[in-house]
Length: 245
Image 1: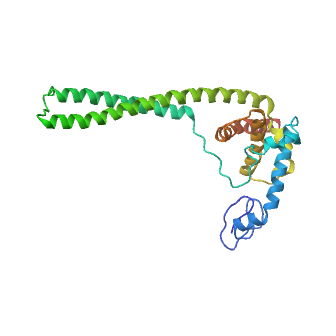
Image 2: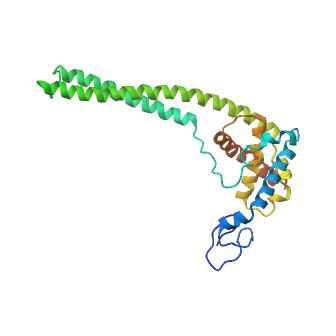
């Protein structure tokens, strides 16, 4: 048995969800097919909430909100965001490790080829064969090290750019996004919902508002930013409400 609202699974014999009080169904897939029209209406409500929070946009710009993250149909998996700065550091570490092993290996091969190692000497064709095989291997280490170093430089520039954009978006959001205004735009949709469902609805409005102001943002980057900024916006709002009481 499944709850169609919070999507929790229950054992046989239970008929109502303990969290939201909805009647349980046998299959979420069948329920979703039967209530496709209700989902479309729900998306329209989210779009109306977007215009309520951002009144300078009107229905003439509706094509802008068609692909706004958070207003897409349920079931689409959000893109995974990979921090460019972390990837840059990983490539930097790999580059130094590969280059170190490669150059130390080449020195070892030179010493081995000229029989300058007192504990290990080769003679005849074996010397050419062993040194040749090891030379190719350590040369690959060096090439891979330079490739990783090049990737590090590219990712470093991208990370700096992302950090600059993130700072700009953060400054704008602190001036223009308000937790109470977002909740007022959603209205009764938040009543009775668990905190997780409130997060998704609030985040959808935040994404649509930010996307309208900053065009061309990657979905993964936007999801990451909203996830980070959400706690600042609503945790601080909750704390202020407690102080007032």
